[in-house]
Length: 601
View: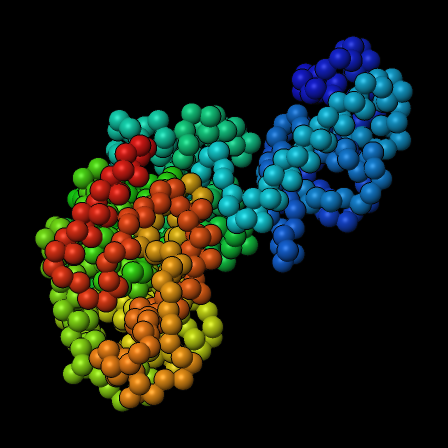
């Protein structure tokens, strides 16, 4: 009955049919139910198995003792042969993804088999070597937190059945069938899923999905509570679980969704939220949706805006484009030129982040409908900062030299009450929490507060106080947060980094005594002494000292970017600039970005 399946296994392919058929009498037929464990790590090896039908999954434990999948086991594959050979406890846990049938061969029967066909041992060893190599590769990727899969599975459902998302689903489905997308995506609604399930059960459905994987990179499933049993099955294959809501409604999760969210298999899968908005709607109150659930990311989609759907599909595919803008004080004008280059080359910006001045330019970009808008916002911020570092903004130096009043009010004027989570695309800024000695990643809350914290240069401006903690400039710990963007978007995403950091090396020879009175200092400055003292610029030295701590982190992060833009900004001051210098910086960023992105794919 199972001769044809066994014959197609490399292990038995060279054995005569008559001998093989007689050998099958030594095997025991085993039925295993969905989610049933065949054996687990630490069990004594007593047999090997051949999969006749259905699917199983092999799992290892990570450093936290949690099981994670390293691969599926399909019809015709061997299970447990290593334990038979080395007599050591099982090093994998294997359980059924679907109902399955197996042939079991005990150790004693296996020895008899070797005496009839000794070449079986060679084939088993070859299988073990290949499997162990795959396991090592997987463990290496897990340790780097960078796991690349050949295919992606996206499971979508609505937060409840009462909302109308027909326009969203129709537009998304149509887009996946259009030129440039049809080769990459396949949209499967629940009726198609049910059709294949009714014909061949879970195994038949798995076989259909396996075929689709061969011709499409990303499979998108949409399912409702009518087929809850299919949803629980598909979760086991999903890389991404998407909940769809209507932004103008209050959150109302159905019992079906709540049950899914509690399912153990879903806890290891990225969960993201899509909020749909009608044309002309003001995006607001997103925080109400984010509070009860730990979403990896959330997306806003205006129903009639095709670019929003295109962006969403890039996220589904794991190939979104992220822009990272470093700190650089007044040199941040160069980031404006970088953004101009991306627009000119029609490179989408699906997510954006920054540190210090980079966080400001990134935030201003989100408000701008044109480059002129962006420049006006940067100028408004520049004026506020310049006013804040003038002599009349000096304050009693309890926590800083300057009071930052105008800089703060400029940010408040620009962003008003706008919140990060209500921005059309994902945004975050980085600040340094000196109270906890850690980085803060601002993904929700007031835009002006996130940027004000990210740009609070120690000594210059007061820190931002949040929950009793002191937040200072993000450049103290992470001036180029590519690592945070990579974690948000994933290993296959394209990350473009714009870095304004310059070499910390200072070739100038300084000379002045370790003790210097105010009188001597003034006389030296006026040229009234014989000694020729050479002093560094106080504020430049302070800024360099601040950035020195994150220099190694920036070097490490450069390697995580796909495109590294690094305009030469050495000749420009860090604090105040003439208008001609600002224009030169914009042009420098633009030209350097064009050169780096000339082969952008």
